[in-house]
Image (cartoon, rainbow, N blue to C red; front, side, top):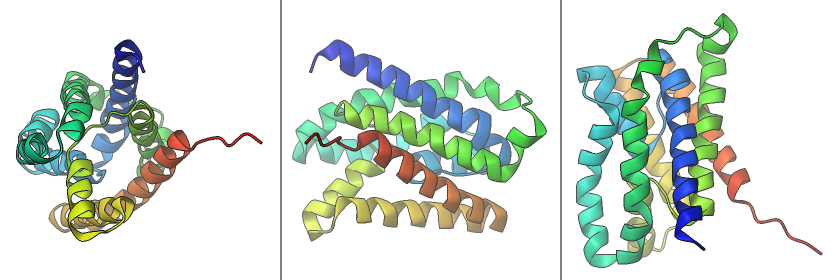
Length: 196
């Protein structure tokens, strides 16, 4: 796979992910799971930049990856940096007024989750990712022989539950819908088509 194709996948995936966060999740205080969710929680509570928070919180995981999972490190570092950069670069879109239908919290959780999931799926299809808790889930999977998908689901549920406690019950319920839609969208993007 060429470096150029992987670079284009990271750019397109990061752009879609950032649009989903800034146009749909952020205006309704919705969360995604993992490091993105942690970055959003920190932003909602204290106003720190979401992308920068994601990078800072990911440092310990990437240090472990450097020493124990060098391939994961190389496949994720570019996705982490570029997607975090795009999240903060496109932050002014948070004030764009969309139609009332598109800005309703439920519709925003569905559309935002879909855009985030497609963005992540595009990156995964080209063997890259945003790193963060995906790497953490891989470590847990290797250590405890747990399915990596189950580990991601557990981490995402913990992050969203924490955000729901700190922000609001509505945030919790709608964010659970968001992570479900992210999971479905990512799965559909990474499915292999079997030819007979």
